Length: 171
Image (cartoon, rainbow, N blue to C red; front, top):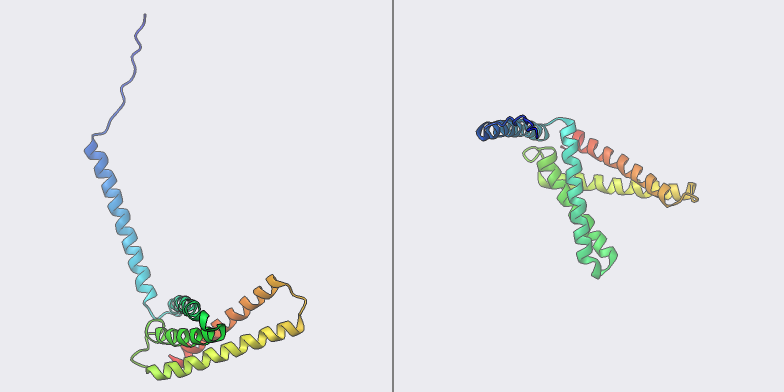
């Protein structure tokens, strides 16, 4: 009977493997921390794109606030719930835009932001309502998905105009 000589496995000392792993992890962590820090600095900056990102985040938060208030007040009637949700979420969004989106809390007073931002919100509501009415009048045969896409496009256009007007005129 023949005995085979099997090669022995090469092994690394456990300390070296742990050091390589730890060094790699720390380098990765430092790289991510640096990248996150740069992203945070950019998002806090005054660049138009950073303001647009903050504008969208504030809009999302105000929509969540609207929905929560609407659901809470729905038992009192849909119209009252809609009115309260719209007024409160618009006022909240105007203040967040003043403080966070455009960093204008020292330049623009609270009531100015509420009046001008509220007027823009009402103008946007009028534009979207008019565009939807025009769409229903000119293309009544459109199905649900096409109408939803049109409303989404109209709303995006109004949001873009609102952002530009707030950025260039109000704040």
